[in-house]
Image (cartoon, rainbow, N blue to C red; front, side, top):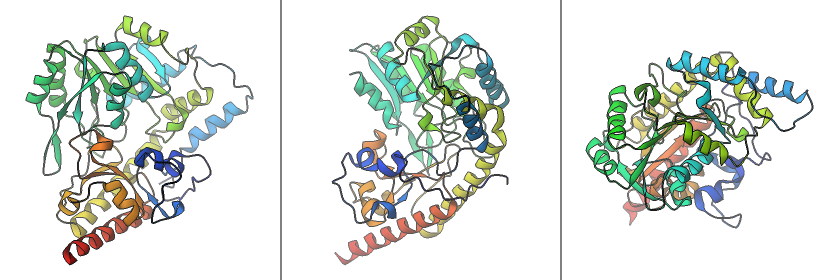
Length: 408
């Protein structure tokens, strides 16, 4: 392999959310909150960015742009970025889209906040499936819109859509928008074409808007294929697709996302209400273009490394914690693990593992909206020796907890 995914990089002192923001994000607390471990002793398997270096090709592109020495107001005034993005989409997904549909946001989350506000009236509803990425709920809360949840079904670690429940809730005249996650976070499901078609039929029959969050679409296991919802809903105007190279190439902090809006009227509303008035970070622009132009090989090697990380975790759970039914996710670098067989009596699992194992992780209904009690989400986009240390700590904490329960 040409790239070193085993390198340990110290992120402390960079104002990284990963190292410095976990108290507020996971525990809704400030610096006064103390744990059994020092901050530098934690194994951090939580927030969904990587512990891998951003590809050197991206770093070099940023350096070249820095050498131009002026960082004034920046817009996309030519076709070069669009060509890079659509060449990537054609190669990866056999799909592209007209240039006029492409708009931008500092991230998928800010776009969600804006779109929910634009598309859903105060007395109307937003529909999601659960468990869910927490910001789908936050976008509804922020805009004071009612959230309706359709729980996914789970059998032997495999998540599927309850189409009857989804159709029933979509048929409510007050429901106006489905926020869809493809691939799904946190379960890691890559939805099959047949599943996507069923969802598309429900959306179209009820004339809903649909936002398809596809930010994890590049991060799939070997042999898997991502199908953009736009390939299924070829002519449906009320579709918005959200994509970015940020998750794939570990540059979420550069704050840049592609928001692909088919409906021309909505596009104009979205752009007119853009809080950045069309301006783009010049370093973000060159970084994302370089990712699409030059980083395909890096992604191929990343996928191989992630596949091995998942293989290790799956084997570890099978051997050490056999009551857990774990299925390697088809996408993302996030393992969604049901801890109920061992920790059903623990109300706050992130706090348990922080204090008992020195492992920072996310999980439960509070962070993943619903249908998530007893589950944890483990970030596996990190050097394998870090994962080995984290998994051993998790196992030992569970063993100590079991011994304590027996002694009582």
